Image 1 (cartoon, rainbow, N blue to C red):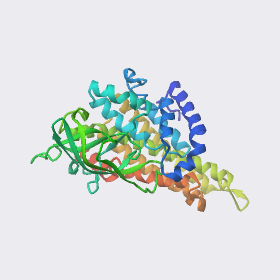
Image 2: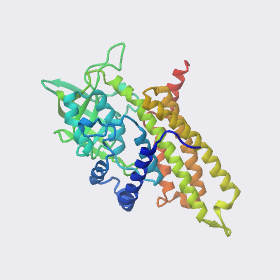
Image 3: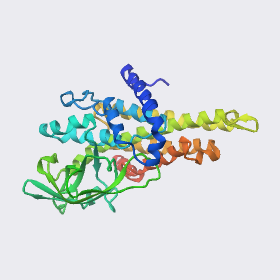
Image 4: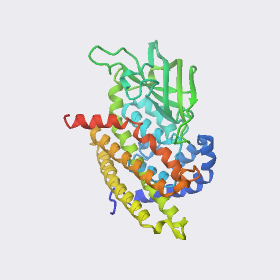
Length: 383
């Protein structure tokens, strides 16, 4: 079926990005994969291509395009060739919405020009050891001391945390109230070069090996009050506003991975011979790939509808949760079946399907687990 969400400008951008990935990323990706991190210079190249400034207002150096469709294309094209580009996705999809929504004019003038050029890479720090999806239970605290907050605590699973220059840190600035345990959270834009800030460990993950996921430690980090984002103690509501876009991103990324898995599997079975015949010639292979394509077609309809709703501003938390559950489960099934078609070679990391299998698994965990998503959907149903 013909997709209708993208126009000529989008497809021109797709062609440019595809050429960039083939020329500047694929020749070096194995080295980055083994190192577990992309080079900082990649972010400069991505910035030169305009990838960080697409939705940043023109007055701060961006293109001023208020749409997630270019981000969707980035998901699709990186998945197509089996790569991930470090913390760049967090920089644009997770951090930027908070800056656009909460930053004052003075803050935007300080933050956004360097955001666009990649001179300052941003990350988002919510999750803490032991709290997981319970955001209101976080213990990282910031106490006001004159014109600075003094920040103490730790965060974990922070994508982009090793190379980040600024981190939006969710922390407790006031105690929770008796009737509202969500009260008292605030967001601080923390300069990672501040005394007392340190990266604990670069975490050794199952997949997404080139994303520098880290533990962060704050020991009496002094954060100027002018780096408070939004109002004090209202952080929980801010976090909730951006979760639908984050969950759409995970859904769209999962769809893109599933589509890529079919591409990898078809290429493999058309070349691999068994008993004197290509694997593609067997009826079971045809049926498996056909079934996978049907599932991916359905996921495409879901993510495209969610994308249009997101751009209109009416993607609800329940709709985003539904898209995430459906697309991540589809990707799980499709990638597993496509790996099976590779036989033993599918288990080898030199084949992109093996890396894709590992990369995909976290989709049902981060951004809110599948179980949390089902709770949101059920609540929306009145259950």
